[in-house]
Amino acid sequence: MDLQKINVKFFMEKGSEIPLKDLIPIFHRWIQQDKLEGMLIDVAEYTHVHQGPGLLLIANEANYSLDEMGGKRGFLYNQKRVPEKSGEDHLRTAFRRILGACSLLEKEPEVAGKMKFAVNHLQVFVNNRLAAPRHSQSNEELEKSLKPLLGELYGDAKTLLIPERDPLKRTGLEIKVENLVSLETLLLKLKTN
Image 1: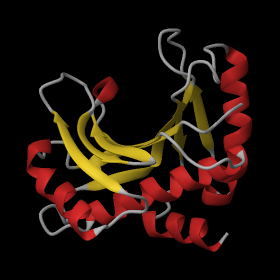
Image 2: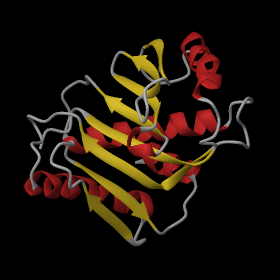
Image 3: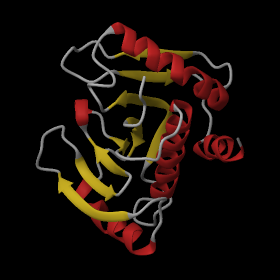
């Protein structure tokens, strides 16, 4: 399965009531101060769209968004273009970048202590219907690609992988992990391996 256009979303545990418009200055500051990997370009606001993309930080290689798709706010990394790599490298890059962004946002003075991401509740999907057509085999391939990385990050913790069943949605999995590991621990594991 081609995982070039992988998406990883960590759901928000605390802070869903914070108006997304209040976070626009943070994203602009990140662009000005070059806070994330890659070339950051612009901020787009879609808070008027019910359960939509919310607040986007547009970059050359990927988009980051505080989205509300499915009625659950979270921080989403949407990989757009990357050099040729293996599927495992795409997954590692996506996880490292979104976890780094989650950590950075949680520490911003405007939301410090008010916002927290549930690193044990996430969603992974492929934003390419041609490379990952909607059928059970695609979900099985995605699960097979993800399991080594999830094992590395969460150890032998009980992990529930729930495949996307809606045929109109993209191939993906919702993942719930029983192990409560810190965001910093996950980032450290991704940086040292």
